[in-house]
Image 1 (tube, helix red, strand yellow):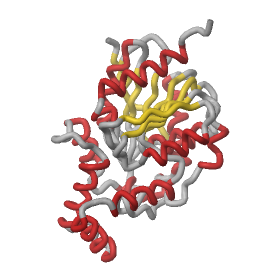
Image 2 (cartoon, rainbow, N blue to C red):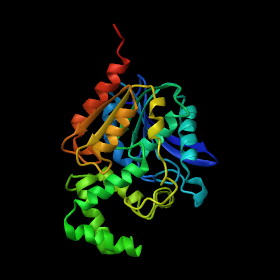
Image 3 (cartoon, rainbow, N blue to C red):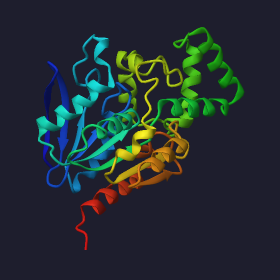
Length: 292
């Protein structure tokens, strides 16, 4: 199987990419975070039987350059980065998959650069940060009382790095980010990328539940109708970006379908790997199949 790895020049910095497979319309992946890196999306390599799959680490994380310049961490710059990656790699036609923050980025990209996008997969994401925050707060109130109270206590103090707060956050993650025990190696590598990550802190905020960064007011719910390509929306039953968030996207994009993975939270591609890859492969295959 053909594998190509290299660096792309973006705004004077270097972006790492890896392309696996050949023949067929490529799948370009946009990872989450912001600042997480591609590692946890590695199971998608199994989709290479019919197409290349392309991973890249967005600027500020993983194997890409990590400049110390907070002015870079704006969604508009990340949109331009996606376009530079496409142009440099000659990706005139692609399927586009965005997971979590990558889904927000994919939606934003589709509203300004829809040319050549054959289909869109929006995985465990939303069209609105305020809706996500509201849903996350609802999930927090459903945690065991002592965990919920711990989160409230340290958030009131602004002490997001206290060991007790971090332990309570981990309990939320075990329920709503990844329900596998132990977490698989690709996810552990991604989690390590987020430790003290300035991209995450600048764009999102100090924690999953305190979104006061550059993305805090992002909301494209009223523009979803502008997305016309076939769209697959995937979500875990226990997802921190809940089925309610997914349903909002489904209602907004007319040419869309939604699949809920009943045993998963935020990482259905890891938690129900075989089923997830089958759904995505069938979706792309059906789009490419000649119409009778």
